[in-house]
Image (cartoon, rainbow, N blue to C red):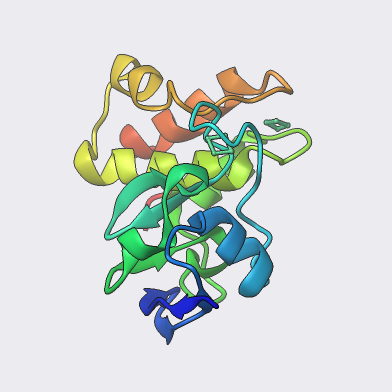
Length: 158
Ligand code: FES
Ligand code: FES
């Protein structure tokens, strides 16, 4: 049978009874019922499954749950500050930076991690930083605009 893996998820401690080799994506979506983290490729190349682990953007589809033991995991469900959206979420709304929304949770969390590192990221830094996140709807320009809006301090700022 599986062994419990204890970690902090969206501000509370969880210890799902799963085998440590199971990928975090499936533990989140299956055992923990958080389906905001999406499955795209399953191979670490599309970014749909991006979550934050100790503040870093991580592909949950290629992350064994054992590797997040004792760490802080944030999914899109726990990203907003209660009812208050985070700046990058507000900017996505303001720029209409989505179409079907499938890539959006991963995009937002990847963008947040990038902006934590480079609060005034240039367009090139944003393009490079989001290189691992694909949008099949082709909303890239609006996504770049939303992130650029935060980086330039024009909107979405807390
Ligand atoms: S589903 Fe994880 S990177 Fe594509
Ligand atoms: S909005 Fe549909 S995949 Fe990006």
